[in-house]
Each structure stands twice: as C-alpha cells, then as structure tokens.
Length: 356
Image 1 (cartoon, one colour):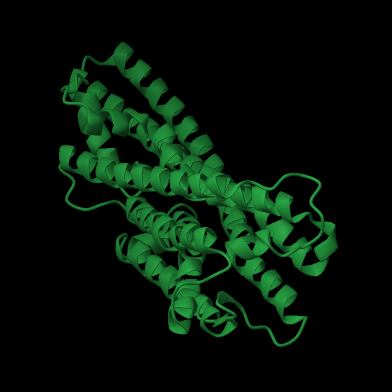
Image 2 (cartoon, one colour):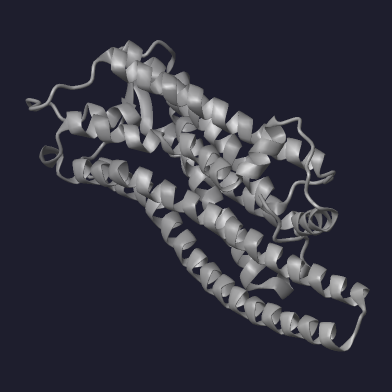
C-alpha cells in the first residue's frame, strides 16, 4: 500500500523523485531505529521492575509493551516487505498467495498501533475518571482485555487485503473492478486507522485531563490543610512521630499527583505524535485517491516518510518522560535517596496510577 501512493500518478514530475538507494536507506534506517528503540524500552521496563522488586508490570506498562510489539512488527512485516518490493519493482517474486498474505500482514501493525492508542486512552479514562468502577475490576485484566480487543479488531480489519490484492502481470497490486472502489477503500482505511482512533483518544484524554486538573486542585487544598495542621501541632505538641506521619502522607499525595500527571502527559504526547506524523500521509492519500491530478506523486513519496517515523518515536518519547528509569536501568550506581522518599516512591510506583 505504501508503494502504491508513490506510483499512482504518471504525469511529468516538477521535482526529482528520490532515488532507489535513498528509499532503501530510509526503510533500512526506520527498521534499525525502530528495533533498537523498542527493544531498549522493553529492557528498561523489565529492568526497572526487577530493581524495584515489582512482580508484575503496571497496566500502562502492559499496554506500552503491546505498543512495542506493534512497532516492531511494523518494522519487520510492514516496512521490511515494502523495502523488498521497492527493490524488485515492477516484478513481484512470489506466488499469488504470498502477494495476498504479504499485503494482509503489512496493515495489521498499522491498525494495531492505532487501536492500542485507543486502548491506552480508555485504560487511563477508566483508572482516573471512574476510579470506583476501576477498583471493582482487576487492574491487570482490564489492559489485557483492551489489548486483546485491539489486536483482534486489527486482524479483522486487515482481512480485506486478502481479497483486494493479487498477482497480475508479474506485479502485486489491487484488483479493483470499479473506479469508485479505490477512493472508497482509501477513505475508509484512513478513517479507521487514523481519524477515528485519534478522535476517540482525543475525547477520552479531554475527560482525563479535566479529571486530573480537578484532582490536583483538590490535592493542593488538602496539602495546604495538612501543612496548617502540622504547623499547629508544632506549636501545641511535641509529638515528632505524628509530624513524620503527616509529612509522609503529604509526600505520598505530592508524588501520586506528580506521577499521575506525568503518565497523562506521556500517553497524551504519544497519541498527539501519532496524529501529527500520520496526518500528512493520510490526508495526501485521500486527496490523491479522489483527485489524482491534484497531488504530485514525488511529493506523495516524500510525505510517506513522515508516517513511517511514528514507530520510531514512541520509545524516545517514553524515555524523555522517564529519564530516571532509563538511568536506573543503564547504570550500576546505587541510589542515594533518603529512606522515607524511597519508601514513598516504591509505594506510589506499585499503586494503580504508578509510573510507566
């Protein structure tokens, strides 16, 4: 599907198209950076859990691991075959069933990545906006269910590829019988894989951000009240143990709010990056299918590069928001945090709204 956008128009090109070497190098770099970044993210998650003696991954970590799997599959079974097909164009070296199966596999990670973003959004919405309902259900069964639904729906939406593609004239391409089928499919594909998931995730995060804002405002008032009580106790009592207890509770509230906001910022940034990086390619694809003469094919080829960057970005966004975990996983130095901070930190990390 990727190479189809680059070869749809046959008009004279005002700009020089990228050479075969440049396209192959781009695909190779996408594969290597995606494999390195997502493999490192998987290592950092499990290494931190081992250091913190956490027996199970957190709900968001579970969904992020599924995102890593989708990005790795995108590099291996989406970009990889595209690289091979680009090198052998206009000949597809393989039987008809391999043509169909390749096109079927290529879009599964694209659907899965978008649907997993919705799953992450839904999980945060359930945990933050509906905490009582979240407590009644298992914090670990919920993300497992969401990810299973995302993968299942992704496979189902990919099945039309088995019927739309076939090997003809030594090439693997679509077998549309009517002219309207191609623009219809392109519009539906981009709506399902990009526009609709982005709209759902955006709405859920709007609700999450509103709930987090209210929560942090309430927590700020609570911390101020506790601070006033502690100051009053200093004047009326000499009970140091009670002061330490209130101080520890205040630290827990502060840390919990900080980790909750950080988690929302991270997952919201990943959703926004997915929307922005895929927007040029999806919009160009739709315009090209509806008005072929409106989009230059060479321009469409360059635009295609932006969408491929999405699988590379997610791990590095995670590292940016979790630099401490990256340092902890890649360093052998012992932590010098005070004991009370360490106890509060581990307690918060093992809560429902823990760090990623």
